[in-house]
Image (cartoon, rainbow, N blue to C red; front, top):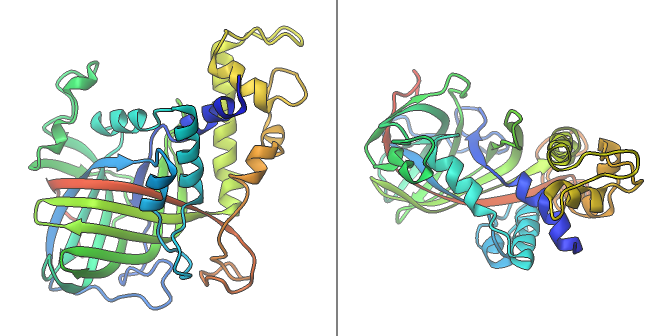
Length: 339
């Protein structure tokens, strides 16, 4: 099995599902912003549910959803670029799992835009929540994915999930119907296999989307994961997933791993099992040359020596950039008090 096909097992698993939710910041939307924009409290609320979420499938798509996170005038999307390159080279379909889980309401992202006008406005607040209990239900028959996606009718109602922050907001401006917001704090939810979703905090999060009264169009969301979160949150979850893949298709007996031909578990062991013991502990995964050169290789200097958001202040690259695309349709839900 080629190197690219082997490492694509990890990429496919890690991008099986992305959900997005903004972390609570101050009322000015400045989770990472040293000069936060004040949200205009006289704005009208317009609500949406995310109906499309796009993981880059090639370098062109990765560039298209990249955002300038550190203010150097260049788009940043190192992880998206890596995944897009792997998808294009190996002919992988990374998007299908995302589409299926979104349609089946395995995760729901709601957005409320507070603005005095949806064409031109200052002090625009974008509040983001986890959702649940869609009406109509997402699927007519949950066992048949072709019956799913009913919550994207444009007039569906939702509840805000109990585990959703009530003050998650990024502030910005609308000009000609284009909303630019950030920087702020945003989280990516990654359900890896059968484990509970992994929540990773993004810093320097930026939002760029075209807005109408009924749709969010051509959206892109970018941010970065700190090196500590890569090591302490992402890598342990990936390692747990690899253990599951090995268990499902291999039956080790001594140094004979007994993996099914062409299986994901066999591919994992081919590349990540350096000592040939038919297992991939965390230390072995993190010392892998590809992992060390990509996932564990930050591309941005976003934090100062004290860990505060202060791009390009100390010359130490401390964060790994990510970018995804999205779209949304109209929705309805009851806002928390105070918004």
